[in-house]
Length: 273
Ligand SMILES: Nc1ncnc2c1ncn2[C@@H]1O[C@H](COP(=O)(O)OP(=O)(O)OP(=O)(O)O)[C@@H](O)[C@H]1O
Ligand SMILES: [Mg+2]
Image (cartoon, rainbow, N blue to C red; front, side, top):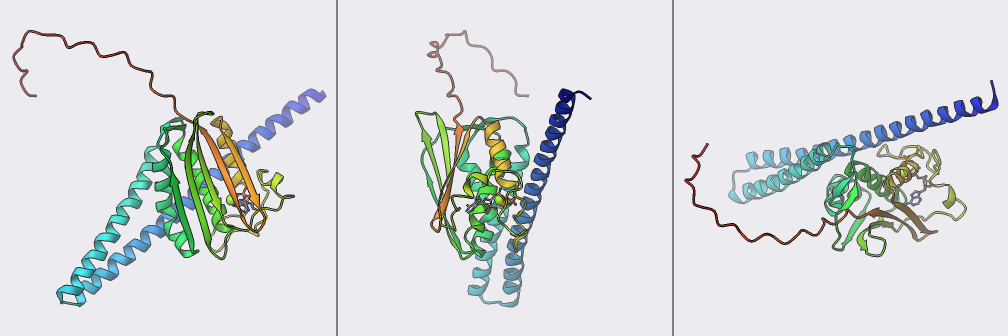
């Protein structure tokens, strides 16, 4: 076989492998999402069941009122969880469309609330007014989950995650930063973190997450498909910040001024259907 055919064949095989990698990461992300959501939901149901039992056991008004309050709060949380999952399911399209990133972040945090509490991680938000971003919501949510779980794993003893949203008027991008107060990344490791299968983790943690080394390589692929940028800054022992620069959705074209109202002869109201 001529060398060029060999090369074409090899390139084709690499392409197929890359597609399989993307598919594998999608499935891992979906698996993590399903397991996180199920745990969250189960936790809320346990609260509801326990307070319903308490209310049945104790006849005094005070205990019953407390039980109802707790049941109501937990049910509201359950509704929030299902709403955020339904939101994701609705947004299945493979398209990039004007999307409210603030809402997307809130929906993602609902799912990670329990996990962050368990690992004693405080989440701070600093959201400036931003225009909608031109993104595929599901894919950017996958990126956000990867970044947040990496941040959590870099702080085994607890810590702080800061999520910042701002508009860069000059570049016309919506910038999303996830900063942690974790271990930081050694300078010699930093150039490799986006390589497929590069991981310093010894396998999945106690929550079954991490260790394949596909997280950041998928994040980079997704951001490149959006014609965006992903940047990282890290200081050993202090923490790490990842910034996504995503294109803002084009503003609706300035509309021509409305025409003056026409005076039409009055017509009989149409019968109601
Ligand atoms: N916030 C962070 N703080 C410290 N190190 C990080 C952080 N994010 C990523 N890293 C480093 O980059 C490596 C690659 O990250 P990546 O998300 O690609 O893989 P992973 O988390 O090891 O496995 P997974 O594929 O399950 O996400 C990590 O193993 C870790 O060494
Ligand atoms: Mg990861």
